[in-house]
Image (cartoon, rainbow, N blue to C red; front, side):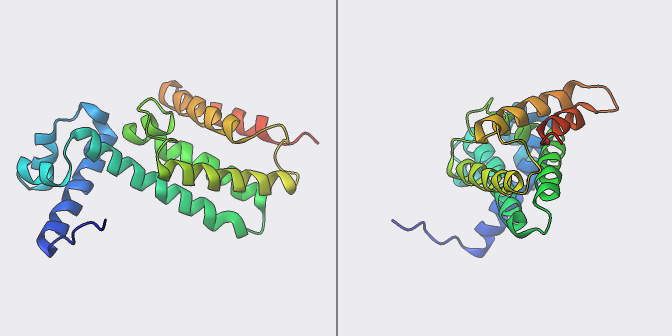
Length: 182
């Protein structure tokens, strides 16, 4: 069954709500009230509910869109000249960006149950595993690491980024541990 086509004004309002929600969730996670998101978007609360039946549905839409973007970035890197650098740079970028966004951090760490369980999460995981495999074949990443290990390492790095001191060297320590020994 096809989704109904939205009128132009409805599409604009939906986009405004998603943008406002992304900003609000980045700061406050699920604690932000829907009325606040509506206010930030410049629409009424009814408009938010017409597009998203619950705060959790809106949260999921925002987070899954960003995870889908990560998946596309990883797929784009599959043709990089240096698979090891592509993998490590991407891994660090995901951790850095997610650590600055509470909603994304929660989703990737699976504390919300959204991150790797929805289709966008599956796509992200597949793309990340392909990037890992390519880096392993190039001899840049240890061979005893798999996708489950990466998910756990991302969650651990996100926690380290959120709770470490200013120098934030712990992600570098993890990345060094992923490197194949000489």
